[in-house]
Amino acid sequence: MTTRPVARLSGGRPATDGAGVRLRRSLGQSPDARLDPFLMLDEFASDDPDDYIAGFPSHPHRGFETVTYMLEGHMLHEDHLGNRGHLTSGGAQWMTAGRGIIHSEMPQQEAGRMHGFQLWINLPAREKMKPGAYRDVRPDEIPQAPLDQGATARVLAGSLDTSRGTVEGPIRGVTTAPLFADLTLPAGSAVAVPVPAGHHALVYVFEGRAAVGPADAGREVPTHTAALLGDGDTVRIAAGDEPARLLLLAARPIGEPVVQYGPFVMTSREEIEQALADYRDGRLTA
Ligand code: CO
Image (tube, rainbow, N blue to C red; front, side, top):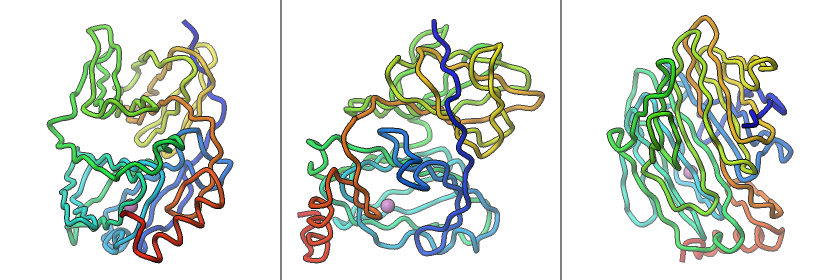
């Protein structure tokens, strides 16, 4: 067993996206701040409607997948085909933009807390132009698995091996084999979770703080911070003297060039120019 060390910490930087949604971006602030195949990780968390009410009006995507995971709040997704999906507390949406999706993501509340994440996962070149698709995942479709020492994991994508067996999330069959798990650790607890060697992995702490890495050389990860991990086959996470909650994300790297222009992520400049022309001419999704 090789425990993955922390290679780098990336604190969530304040950013604004959509029509004025305030969020924290811990991956994707710059081209260097990615972890193949993960392109971007945003956390939005606010009790103030001014921080989220403007939402994300109609906008395009091409070439990758977006994962929206809601902890609290209610958003309505509508795409160019008239598909509608409600994202509610504890639920998720897994969208494969493929060659193109044009959609909006708008808050369905005028008060109260909105808290969630959006993660962008790249697609390999051969899948970038496949038809767009998305899947709404209800809260009760995400299994909650007991881990050691009273910790638990909600598994949205991939599978997690625990001492009580393997837990499979509802999202499977993605080429990069992503693991997307939401872990809750009681104060003072520690867990060791297997993650395939060679996959890239990160831990994003969003409540409390955690020590990540080998037991004798763990690194303290503050709230709202991503810990990008080195290689190994096990991720070890220990809560401090208060409970901790975090996302554990892992996936097989793609190893291809990444050329991004806003919501288009391709492998060359020519493909980006094609995406812009297709969007302008109404052919993005055709
Ligand atoms: Co979008």
